[in-house]
Amino acid sequence: MNGFNKGFDQIGSCEKLKKMKKEIMMACTTFSSQEKAQECCRKLIKKNLIACAQVIGPITSSYFWEDQFCEETEWKIEIKTSVDKVKEVENAVLLLHEYNLPQWITWKASASTAYGKWVESGN
Image 1 (tube, rainbow, N blue to C red):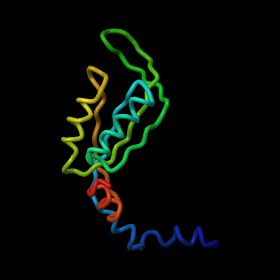
Image 2 (cartoon, rainbow, N blue to C red):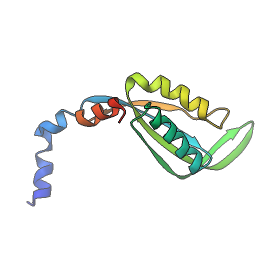
Image 3 (cartoon, one colour):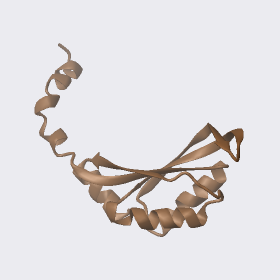
């Protein structure tokens, strides 16, 4: 058995994995361009509302809008923030957003204790 496989055999008893219990918030939205997505991220980080964000894209979004089928190229943002700041982040994103009805989806996630503390600190 090589060291890599041996490590997987020991995962069940690994104390580090048992300590991955810090709760953070994840959120996502989309923008029509990479530039607009990145600008939103910069503003949220500079206001200390989020710890970090990733801009992913381009992606293709398909949906119905006003009874018409649409396919658009968009850029997705994945945001990490604290549970306490998620409502403030939502308000800021809605103010910054270009769309009339922007996607805003949030969910709780478990993170390592150290990463979770970093997210809570905002930096």
